[in-house]
Image (cartoon, rainbow, N blue to C red):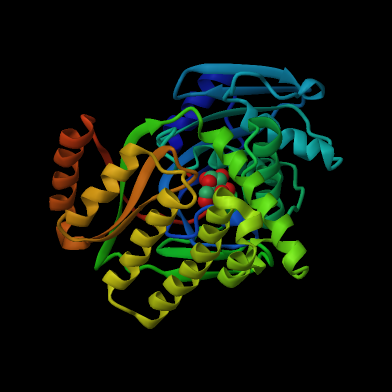
Length: 387
Ligand code: GLA
């Protein structure tokens, strides 16, 4: 949906032209999975799949939302904003409004129409895009002057309180802070970040969408957070300096093994190793190491997510396993929260077509499923769209 079709759809629906049109991208994550809520390191990027928003203040006290892709509308008075049951699509926008109200912002009535091309349930953070887009747009229209990191936190809180997923900061950070052609490393403890160029003339990032989203995803996500917190509480007794898994080492975990128990020990070990992999990967990018050395870290990350953190699923494992034999593939892993969604594959630019053909027929044969693939480009974070 380009600027003019979106503006026209907005005008048709609400009877006036929008005051602001903007785009909010989805994200990939090169490495650093389930590390964000453990004060760790992540290496995401915004991508060229996005939600586009058209907005206008109305001078009333009503919020009117129009989801163009599924032709649904929702309307509520600002004073009545509350979480909607049943995973309602409007929760992302309403959650952001609620966050602003909590900060003492007098949110006036507004109209908002939106639509996009981020496949839902694919682990590309369409929900973060939905939150960040509205947060950025209202910040502009209301001249709130909130900085971009505050917008990321506001959007993350919307996810916690309205979508009821206790996510870390990565997705919202990536959607807001992305830069074309770059991945960005975020230290989720200090909130310092650094951009690393990813040269796509030699290798492309190809997403293979498993097409599944297991219902237990959200509840298992919240369980993993609790398991990590339990791990920290035990490790702390042995070494008080450990405030989060970011502070733990493998010998610390080994020393507390008996008390941690098998499951929590595995979770802790995975997080410590994954943080290490993020650092190794950025070092290899900076040193210009062969892509196979970057790719092997992706395979190692997948193994940890599958065997230690246990957030993979049969379909994702089939895709990762196929990738080992696929033409031009340097490395692959499941991406995002897990239990479905996409694998991320680092593929030689010249071999992308052969890679996709191999994966498509392999997935059909081994999982009996059709494979959707996306060759992604790394994009800028949320910003205005002009006509
Ligand atoms: C989801 C969450 C993120 C992050 C990833 C796993 O995408 O929203 O905060 O925890 O899972 O890395």
